[in-house]
Image 1 (cartoon, rainbow, N blue to C red):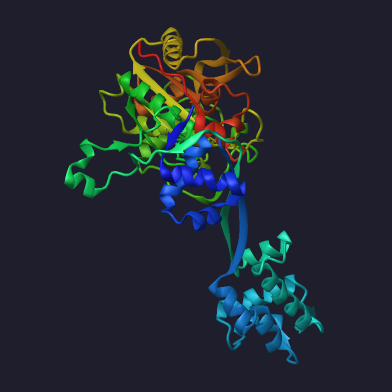
Image 2 (cartoon, rainbow, N blue to C red; image 1 turned 45 degrees about the vertical axis):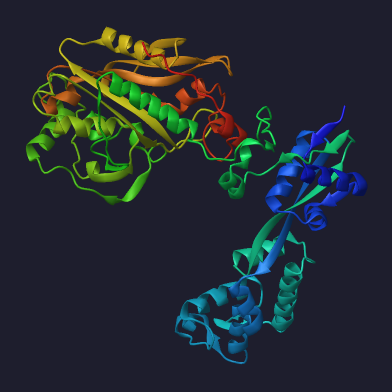
Length: 497
């Protein structure tokens, strides 16, 4: 059966049938047609499996302006060595050197390059060029010329010149097309390929036959950016909080330890404050100016204040509370919010926060040094553990997470406290995804909060592992994350119940 195709497609078919294999440039030169028309013809014959395409990546290197000037005027290390040759130049006088053709900041750089590449030695505090420094620099210049001409392939040498910005890398794609099989084609001279303005003006299109679009052929996947799945999951969680009537709160990454530690009734000798658990900055911050509030925090720590507790039975150190740290949990935002709540909100309110936290801990399949938490709290009269567990189950169910276990645990700032474990299909095991509890009176009394407060913190990366069905956190987040996964991931739809 004869298949009629347009004249350009047939010309390409006929050419490759005769020549068997040609590059894109050779085809373009032989047919002398518009590039876009040629590309369409190539795609058509590829879709018909008449020809195949081979793509080679060609890497070349060209001189930058810095590279060209260095070859012309000399490398900075060459100028430096030429200048100090025969002189008694001390290392201590390096900053005061005035070398022709070198800027002030280039002198130290030239010294560093010369030392690193063994062009100089230091003898009794004096900088002395080696006897063969000229030969070494000439060899470098030769390497540079060879790289630009495509004759040098040492990656170490190439990387050195790339780092110094002497050359830039250029990648071009060379395409080659090969004939695969014959088909019974014939030229369809009556078919019009392109609709032109002249055809439209003359209204001849009513009587003409145009090439049909192949709507059944799938296009190549578009190489476009996508929102990272973790960012989408954070958006889902945020939307869920807002749908449930929560207000959003926020706070700083760097905070005085007062908010994530002292205000939460965490003692100043608690292991959580150790360097192996917390990132400290070598600086001090400032506390709130409300002295009566600070006095309440001090009393709670030392003797329990007016809560009936005995406190921690030690002398609270206000200066230690000023240590700047990277926040270890978003609960610090909760306590900053407590401080600013109105009288009515201290009786009945609910807030959430989604933010990054930092822990000085080893990285493994389920732990990162920096990660995201979704914090939340509810203040209400007579709310308790059953309300907390009910909220946890409802919240996770709306995310599609139903296979969970809830176990009692210990937190210095909540009592009772519970951990939530979810089943991970990949590892066939339960892993912790939430920590929660009811805030102790010692944490609430300084803020004047009389009603109960239920609170929780969710590890968002672990929620991501669950929803994306991954067994290792590195498969979801970080440099080792598979790029094809990021292009094609599908997140299960939330349940809107």
